Length: 596
Image (cartoon, rainbow, N blue to C red; front, top):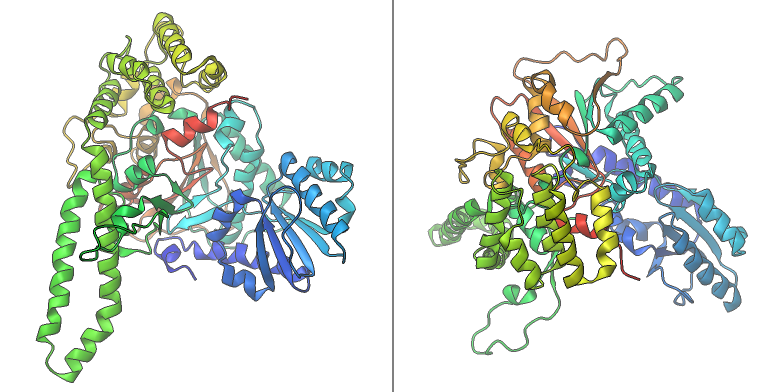
């Protein structure tokens, strides 16, 4: 059991157990000793579902990463390939299988497609002459992976690009499938709200799938009251801005992958007397970040400026607890102190780690360049000088700062101005191509197609209307004891989360005008419940809303939704699902065309 998955209103361990059971059943079909060959991208998500111990119980003796040529030698009866349905991976698998066949004693080969089987991939294996070698060809529908007690992700890295650039709806189908699995485990969700083209598609698919399963009536008492489907392109602004929560900044600076972060090791080396700092570790320090760690759960969603005071308070409490040992006189008191020792030592280790991380982040956030960049972002978001070429951006290009940093700022300016004047846009494009290389013309085309960097059409900037109506910019933000979600960006309230907040109270009717300006349709669907399953809400009991971000979500948005869940009179608790956990950098990276 992963205890941190069952803290919230919805016990996500139920989902984790269901996927683990399916995995065990598949492994047991392949009788005898096994080696698993992993598509490298899948190892992270699988690590959140099943540790090596579970695989070992089912006779998995060796694990390899999928690479060309021959497989490493392994004395096992079964070789199982765990792969995404990608054509380029099929070529590698065929190479592996053919070289194994030449090696000698026959093995049993199996292939598990995650999350769906693909006819194209099977055809490719057939063309390469190896399809017949596989005894089991199955799919493992790992659609939504529980990351935390209130957080699920599909970790589908190409979802945004597929939906908005390539018109490929595969990831939307997987999202709908994932939602059907959730409903099978947690009951039918009575009301579905949505905004955006992809949201509409997912809702349609869910309704169609429900019709196809009419024979079996879902008799699970519903846990969720509402589902809100949100398209990422309804709010293109939020991911472009620099996140200012503790977790958001860790992700911006170091990148969090499947709840793990790799950090520079120097900060974590134990300081020994007199060795003059030689033998410093060279391997990155890898830490898991989730709410199973008490201290992290407390500080992850705070504005970074409020983290220092919490850490120093914690340090005082911990050192006072260790001082208690001098007061323990009787055997009983000593025994009690000893029993608390493991917990205290874990707390001290956790505090040391987060103090080091906070110092690493502070080195970045106190730099002059960070301050300049933040100032420009905040000017754009509050509507200052969005319609002319920005000096800071010009300087960044001239000094050849990282291209992604430049693109994030230019896209932010474009979104905050409902597109740039043609003259300004052409100037930026010319400067970028001349400085960074003409191969990036394809990337600029992608950003334009996605609506991130485009010319202003109709000569009208709608952003001020949206900003005022939805109160997206707040001048006086209390970062220490916030009263509004805008604390996660020190002034800017994420548009996506504001939509969720207004839906719960007073409802979207109050913002019809803005909803019409934002891209895509908005809609509401009801799913009738069989009698006896209708919810009678107790007085003071909160509603539970599942917010599904199609195209990705940032840690700052997650923090803002958690803030709303904890409000005394909020009336709604949120569970968050997404196609991918992302930040502005990983988002732009996914839209960049790799130069050949």
